[in-house]
Image 1: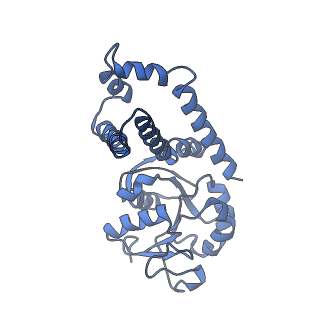
Image 2: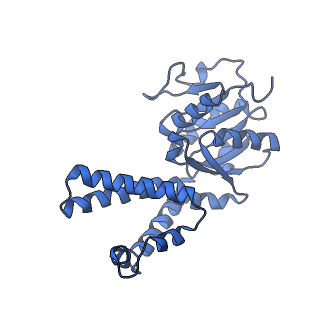
Image 3: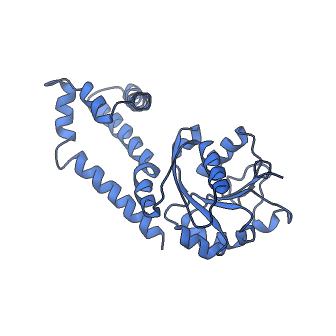
Length: 262
């Protein structure tokens, strides 16, 4: 049986795990799920003890909360040497996971983001010791089922990845939230303020994705000297406004990612 014919074992099926599972099913992969909580899909089991004793997954994917790693991972150590372990647990290091799974464990650490739920996620992955070309290729294929994938060789960069793209959708949602509230404050009807904020953020994101230009070039193209956009950007781009706030926010998220490593 080839790796492509073997199932994927998904441990945890919350929002991100569920998005990954949906992408794999669309790609024709068989998926076995361990999920004790309310998000369990049909056919899932509630514990590793309920898995078939002859199960031979090609990959074991950990999509559980990082603070649960110590109690969850050891039960899957029996798959070390036969399956690649793919983790999307924020902050959990490859060394820390191998300590729980055994020295034979081939671990790929990855950080996807929420747009994976509509197959528009961006994921960065880092391969640990013992991950061969086949395991890396399988991990890459599984992650591409939910969007774009990049790889880094230096694991320390994963904290910055988490801060920029992993947490990044929340920053964009906050922007839409604040634009909607400001529109209402300027007298727009609530429904119209919501429509304008959401569609402006979504449309600008789509334009950015479709364009080869730098974000700064697109910003300058829509900013007429002395116009309304220039007046707004003079506030947002002040030294103590967005440049400072965004830098501090990403630094805080990266710091928390390092703290989660324990």
